[in-house]
Amino acid sequence: MSDRTIEVGIFTVLMAIVVLLGFGAARWRAPENPHTLEEWGVGGRAFGNWTIWFLLGGSMYSAYTFIAVPALTYGVGAIGYFAIPFAVITTPMTFLFTTKAWSVARRHGFLTHSEFAAARFGSPRLGALIAVTGILATIPYVAVQLVSLQAVLRTVGFGGEVPLLAAVTVVSICTFRSGLRAPALLSIVKDVLLGWMLLTAVLMVAMYGGWGSTFRTAAARFEATPNPADGLLLPDNAHLGFLTLVIGSALAIFAYPHALLGMLAAKDRATIRRNAAALPVYCMALALMAMLGFFALARGVRPVDGDLNTVIPQTIHEYFPSWSAGIAFAALSIAALIPAAVMSIAAANTFTRSLYRPYLRPNASAATEARVSRWVSLIVKFGAAALILAVDPAFSVDLQLIGGVVILQTIPTVFIGLLTRWFHRGALTTGLLTGLAVGIGMLYLIPKKDGTGRVVSEHFGGSSWQLDDGRSVYVGIVALAVNLAVTVAATLVLRAAKVPDGVDRTHPEDYLTDAGDPYLKRLDQLIDGLPRAEERPGPQRQHIG
Image 1: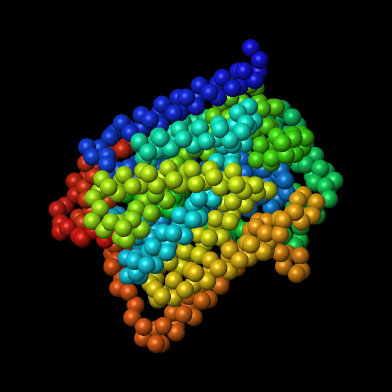
Image 2: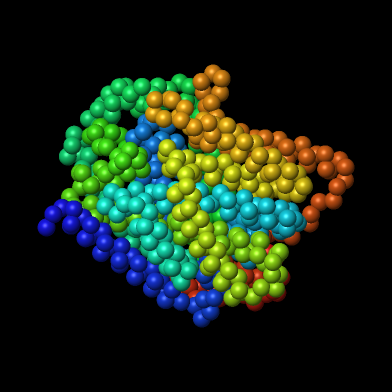
């Protein structure tokens, strides 16, 4: 039996097991009534410590982590390491701010950022605008996962568009049936397989001279290229671009609908805090995968058909034992499918709660909401697949960064809004639209260049704006700065003109709510099976959303 046959065989068997688990997830501690967004969309808001740990790792540390980032370090070197400090920064921010979002969402029954925005600033139109922005930003992020999945399939030997569409179809059916329970359960499998892949990678590097030899050889290869921006160290004119990428990415992650979705599935505030404190473990895995890009460069690995996203899969194929390569390919594929599923669920919840129910069917039942979200989640996945078939970016990271430019414009509303509602609702709308116009306009004007610096296209060539002195800056940060300036100025003008503002439908105590709050609906089914303290009876609060 050839090595390739073993590799493909193990990969196929593991993926078949994953599909069966995905279908069976609907029966995993199933509630009496699964046909609601509370159950399908956020797992009953009852996931415990371990479930949330695996779910967050599966949705936030994804194929983007394990394929796109190493592809960037392989292609341009140190600039690809922006993902490491950005991931580190998100840990304390998650600890401090996400608990507030969980509490106010739990008290009012919110499932999305856009519902919070509508209630916080008394503006359903602002909520709808946040919803549309979030959905548009999520589709490129889903596309990143599918680009990575396509790279794995191509390396395994399943090239072309049909295998990718087949994989998207399968995960869509699993998600349609099981909701958030499917990616939550599969995240456990993914982390087990991923742990084995990382262990094998460490042994592989040690067997071929260690990291010292890797860095020396990679540095020599970078020096031989005509691109002045690559290398193991940042060029002097790249510091600003690196810093703005880190800050922009760290802020953007909180505004994505899927980031909130994973947190809302937690059963209490303590679960969020514990998992935030443990997230640096995933940061170490991210750092290791980024360094594997240097290893691939040092060993002379050639990407399949020149696609840099195949660098890590090709390295695995060439240097892992065939049976271990099959395990690694399965881990990478699951790492692409899980976040794609979570992101599509989050986008579907956003559409249903902030667009469908308020504007199309205000009296929609809980079952109708769940049914609409199921179908919209399918549209999001296949929309992302259509995007990657139509667009061919130099690095799939660019898709995520472009989506980040868009989602960053919601920061004044969904992030700063957790701390204060000083901004006027009209000013927030004006600032958001201005930031989007500036960001998309700058993206359109960025030329696309090849590895030698030659311009191959005049538009949408990335997300870094070149300054006259040779430095660059992340477009998202520039657009956000304009957004904030406009928002502050417009707020002052509207307040001076005594233009009526919306009524804040949240209260200060809402941001400190925990699982024992008497207003909260008691959950009869706990996903993790842990006992729950009996809640004191109390007055029922009107559902807002």
